[in-house]
Amino acid sequence: MTPYLQTRNRAQERYNRSLLRTRVIVEQAFGVLKRRFACLAYGLRCHPGRCCSIIIATVFLHNYGLDCGDILEPNQDMDVNQPPNIANQENNNGI
Image 1 (cartoon, rainbow, N blue to C red):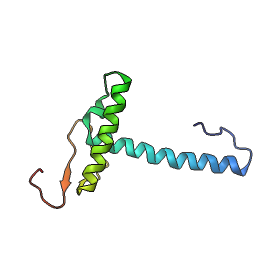
Image 2 (image 1 turned 180 degrees about the vertical axis):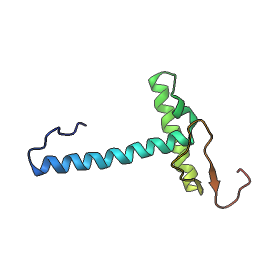
Image 3 (image 1 turned 60 degrees about the horizontal axis):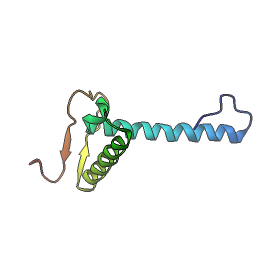
Image 4 (image 1 turned 45 degrees about the vertical axis):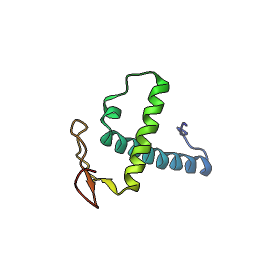
């Protein structure tokens, strides 16, 4: 979706604000997934259909991890070249 370059009425201004807020949330979600799954950070080099399957799988695994209590510790200075620091609140034995 494209924002209005020059808004002419209040509806267009509201549209631009909503679009901006939505885009920020989506970009943050991409950032979380890239930090958690290195294959997304380095880029997928396969057929687009397979890429879609991989992305769906990473989103599923991320949500499953959240449901099981695994959280990705927030760190604004996280480097994509380092593995993510995943903490399990129930036990830290790697399960």
